[in-house]
Each structure stands twice: as structure tokens, then as C-alpha cells.
Image (tube, rainbow, N blue to C red; front, side, top):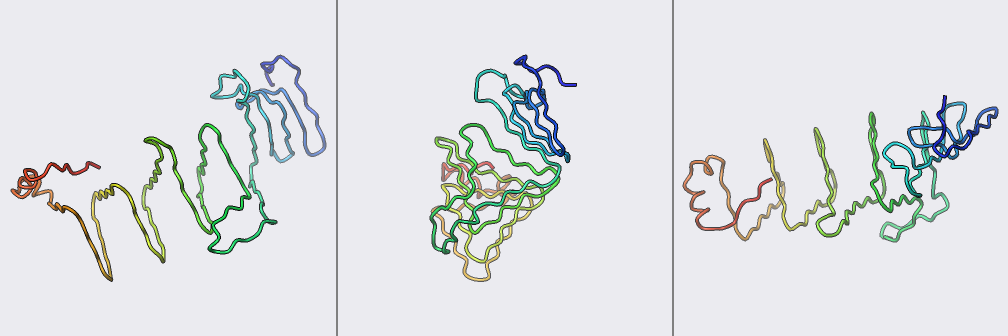
Length: 206
């Protein structure tokens, strides 16, 4: 049985052959303002800002929740033009805009695939923000028939086991100052002491 909504108004439920509409029912998302349910358990509902993680105070904290036990699909943009390969102009067919808060996409027991002509990742946080973090448990692999380019103020590579750099063509390495030492040199060798005395550069800690 549903408990009374926080606004103390009556519950409503209108039942039809294959669907029903209702209002006022309490749920984890907040009190139901308007909800449509089907005979196969799909539902789309608007809830007040009284649900889990909400204080329930003030306007603008309501939720819209779509639930389906199967696939949710959107077909968009069929009437838009197809651009040439060199055309970088935007023709938008889908916009997700979060004025505040985060966007979380989670596939608990599945994969996430992004497929497009071009994919752009932009982290523009301002000040000290603007980070792109990628974590993988087993493998992080990049394949391309073109170039891979890294441009940064600092590039740090830390391998716990092995680092392999293989070039079947021309290999070019340039540096203003080059310091190379094995872990044995750092602990026992004299060369590392000479380098430490000759420079104030501190190797970065990863």
C-alpha cells in the first residue's frame, strides 16, 4: 500500500486496458506527480523533489524517470543533411545539457560503445580543473592507421614491468638535458650522485 504523499493530497489512478496513469504515489524517486505504466512494466514518471538524496525543499529538484525492462531506443536526425568529410560545422540531432551536477552513464553487466565519424573529448574546467581520466583493469589499447600525437607541458610514463618502443622506420629523440640511470645506479652508483650535484632538477614522482 502507498503511504500518503507529503503534500497531503489524494491519490489518483486511472486504469485502462493496456496502461494506467497515476499521481500521488510515494516512491524512492519522490512523490509521483504524473506517471504512465504499461502492462509490460514500462513506466515514465515525473516525481517531486522529495526522493532519495534530496532535501525536498525548494523548487527545481524534481525528477523524470524512465524505466523499461528491455531496450530504450531513440531514432534521430533522419532529415538532416550529410556533411562532407572536411566539413567541421555542427549539425545537432541530440543535445544533453546539464546546467549543474554530473552525468553518469553506467553499464553494470555490459559494454559502452561510442561510434562516430569523429569523436571529441573536451574537459574545460577552468583554473586547475579540466581533467580527462581513463582507467582500465586489463588493457588500454589505441589503434590507428594515421598519427598519434601527444602535446603537453609534461609527459610522464611509469611502467611497473616493461616498456617497449619499437620503430621500424626513423626514431628521433631530442632533449635539452638527458638523465638516464638504472635503479641500481640510483641506490649504489656514483653517476647518480654526480647528476644530483650538477643539477637542481628533481625527477617527477608518478
